[in-house]
Amino acid sequence: MKKSLLFIAAIMVLGLLLTGCPELGIIPPVDEVIPPVDEPVPVKHTISGIVTDVFTGLPVPGAKVGFGTYISTTDAAGNYSFEAVENEAITGNFYISRGIDYIFEVFNGINITPASDLVYDFTIRGDLVAFYTPHTVSGKIYQDDGSTEIADGSYVSITFLNENGGFMSGSGSTYNSTAGGYSMDTPTFGSSCTLFIEVDDTTPFTYYIENVDLSAVSVTLDLTKPSTGFSTVTLTGIDGTIYRGAMKYSETIYFDQTSDILSGTTTANVEIYNPGGKPFVWTSTTTITDSPSAGDTTFNGILSSPAVPGAAVTLPVPTLPAPGQSVDGTAINYLSGELSFTGSADTDMYFIMLNPDSGSAGGNIYSLTTSVTLPADILDIVTSSADSNTSWDFTFVSLNSSPVFDFDVFRNINTLNSDFSYAQVMGATPSTTNLIP
Image (cartoon, rainbow, N blue to C red; front, side, top):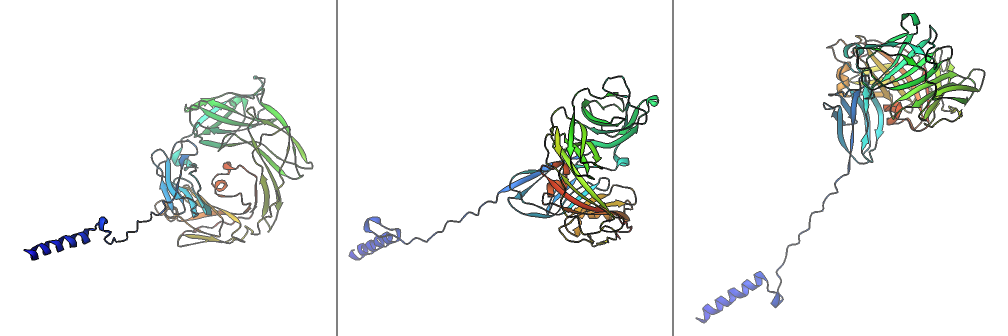
C-alpha cells in the first residue's frame, strides 16, 4: 500500500514539474518566439488621365498610354490609370498610341519620379480622311460698326474649339463679299464652341467669341469685330527678333494673337484682345541662315512665363547656345526595333516625324538620346504590312533645350508655366524610304 501511495505522489510531483507551479517557484521552459516584422507597405501614387480626339473632343477608347514599363489601355470613356511606387524613377519611353489610323507620339529618354498622384491628359489626332466628316461654316465679317464689311481679298483664319477641348486650327479662307464672305470646313462640332478669329484686313484684328452653336452640318455665322476688349501694348526687344504673343485661354489652349518681326527697330505697338485679363506668353526668336551648314537655319528662342500684359512688355532675350549637330547629312537607321541617328550629344533633343508612304497616319518621336527603342505596339505599326506601311519618310530636327524642357513640356507645350529656352537647327532635311525593312 505504501508503495502505491509513493508511486502516486511521484506522479503528482512529476505533473507539477511539467505543468509548473508558481507557488513552488518552478517555471517550465518557454520556447522563444520572435514576432514577425511587418515589411513597410510601399506608398503608391496613381497616374491617370483621359485621352480625347483633338478635333471632336470625344474620348478615345482602346488607346495605349505607356510610362516606362507601365502600360494602360483606355476604357470606353477614354480613361487610363495605373499605380507607381512613390519616388520610383520611371524612365524610358512615354507614349500614346491608337493603331495605324491615329498619330502616335513617343517621348524617349524622359523620366518622372512620382511624389503624388499625377494627371496627364492627352489629345490625339486621327487620319483626317478616315475619321472626320467636315461641315461648312460661312458668313460675312463686319468691322466694329456692325455694317462695314472687311475688304475683299482679306485672309480669314479661324480656330474652332468645342466644349470638350477638341479643336481644328488653321482653317483659312480668302474673303469675297460677292461670294458670301468667308467659307471654311471644320470637323469640330458642338453646341457650345469657341472661335478664335484672325482677320488680315488693311487694319488686321484678332478676337474670339464663345458659346457658338456648330451642331448643324452647315452653319451660317456672321461675325462682327467687338467694339471693346482691345488694348494696345508696346513691345520692346532686339532688332531682328521674331516675336509672338499667345493668350493662355485655358490650361491646355493658347491663342496666338500677334506675331511679327522687329526690323530696323526695337519697339512695336500691337493690339491684343483680352477682355478677361488672361495671361499671355511672349516668344522671342532669332535666326541665322546657313548655320551650321549650307541650307541650314538656326533658331534660338525663349518663351516667357504666362503673365497678364500691361501697357508695356519687354520681350525675353534668347541666350541658349545653338545645337552643334547639323541636320544636313544626318543619317538615321533602323535595326531590330531600334531607331538610331547621328547626333552631337545626348544632351540635345531630337524630333523625328515618321510618315508612311501609304498616306495613313504616321507619328512623332521626341528623344533626348540618339537611340530610340520603339514600344511594341508602335513597332507593330511601323512594321505592319496590312496597310503597306513598310516604306516611310522621315523629317529630323535637332534641338537644344533648357532643363525646363521636361516631360510635361515634351508632352504638351501648353503645360508651360515657366520660362523656357530652346534652340533648333533646320535645313536641307534628308528623307529616306524603306526605313523599315
